Image (tube, rainbow, N blue to C red; front, side, top):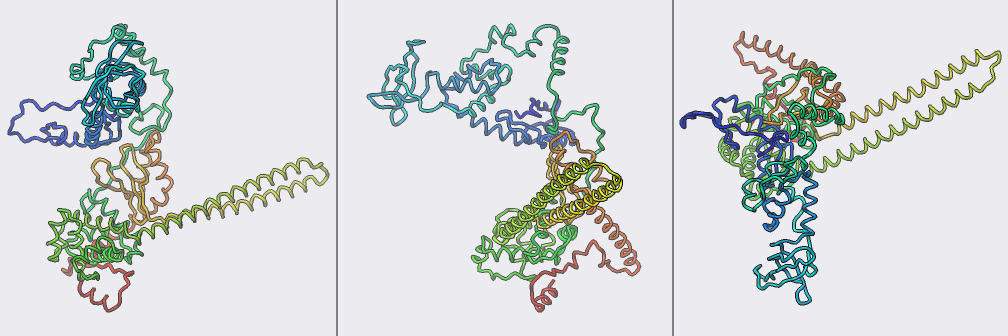
Length: 638
């Protein structure tokens, strides 16, 4: 059973007086039953959080279902322990008070030294070595001998002999330490002391009565022994005293282990993120991925920039539009030029390798057929009939995500990435060189200033002391101004190089994670700060300066994740703030324009074609390298 924050977790019992015909909600992997839907959702969200630990392997940061799978795999591996080792290992585990690591080391050493019934090894026979199995241990101490059975080709015992310990040869350890760890965790119900499961103890004859020294408290740890003696209140006082003498916690630590203290600064409440997307919440990640790829490799795709809102509106639109067609066409051109799997698939279908705004649907159907996914296959006929706009927005984004995945693997994109990486490395080297030169200049200036002060102190005062003092002060001011200007130049160069490095970057990564492992993303060309929910793969965003500041103020620097996230948000605060304010201003202007368009259209009873919400319909790919004649034909077709 998975552990909740490394502690045992008890599943809920079924509701009482449950009617077989009653409609209920059941958690698939725990079989827990709920009458109330909200309670069911709360329980399900708990299971989706990464706070679970595999009891057998000790792996943490898992969901409940991942921990179940991990326990199953670990249990299967633990069952690979040779059968002849199970009984002696369980004998050594039962009622041991050692830590897991110490216990494993002792058992591992004993298994290498001791010989017991059922152990397979090698022995000397007629001047050579042969495989055998210990059938019986005869005697004890220095006079111990072993009855062994010689193993034939079919792994059966063909004859027996009685040998001494010197004649037996062990070539390798009977099992590894990791397998022992898994087996001990799998076969015990309690640690400190370790207690073997009752059914296993009964099966292999393991004693279930605690040893006498443990009954008297001699084999227990100090804390457990104190609980055995005296009153419960005395034990609590002693335990509290022990806890007070512990070494204080050194922060930062894992965020989920942080406990509030009296002297902690007051944290602001984390703002709620907006989720007013037109596409499904679970598809926002695909939307951002496709848009960011098109923006980062626009020149390579010959696809001029467009906004994230335009792409979202184009995906949500119920009719085929120019932006969607241009994106698909650009991606198909790239895949065909690469001559990879999609190119081969088209050749096998004897398709002409010329994608246009008229024929793009056929190439899209070919790609959907090539991926062999059921969701794609069911919609091929819809696309082929020219009703692409009727396809579910989430499925449209899945198709585009698959196209982008194929495009990322092309040679052209890989070469572009390598080129950008080389440029970034060159900029980083230049930045380091400027920092080194600035450091050397500061050192020289400090040495020069120190030398002047020493010379001025050693000089003999005379009648012109005041004049000399004025001259020295003037020289000091001039010497301070010169390095200051150089320092400003150095800072400017470093800022310029940092900006260049960001501009050359084609890979967008998260700024960091909060205590619940939610990830935060900022894209250079979009004025929103996005947050990806770790539990349900849904997205939200922050769009105002006040929300950004409230988010930064809610992060606890005692936690590892939130400390790193806060540093990144503070580092890029100005960039994010300017982007948020710019977008907010644009959105406000668009809303005013839409209101004006609607008022005007209501007077003239005309459709508001110039509304900003349908600006994607006017998209023109200015970077597309086509002739004027083809451009006129395709514009008429669309």
